[in-house]
Figure 1 (cartoon, one colour):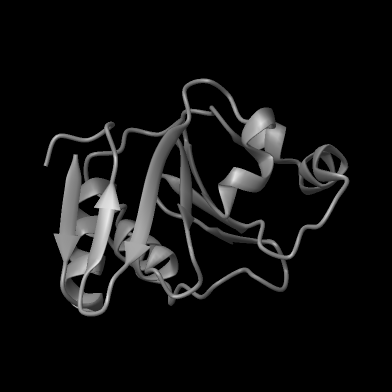
Figure 2 (cartoon, rainbow, N blue to C red):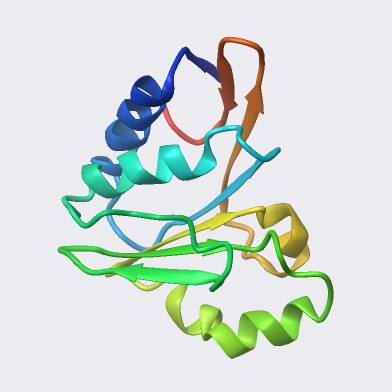
Length: 141
């Protein structure tokens, strides 16, 4: 399913709508170029989970944690160059994913695709001139 958003606010609203449907245990893998709207989407997703903290990109620290009724673990694999499995283990990622009280969202997830569970939900972002095309087969919107 392709969803088109025209601005940051509509991308956040889509994230919020999806976030409000999550039950915990989900791993959401985001792909797309720089500036395609991944972090903006996660900001809305956090709101949908009831998390009102200011959400910023974890690019330079790899992971940020936000606590609420469901805990959100927001990761960014952009800066990873090699030793992917070692980095995943060092972050404790395998201890977080799939747990009922957690939602794990990974930007640049294609870098660690081979290590992610089969149940991972994939969402792709394509930035066009005046719109974002967001593709997923995992949500009915």
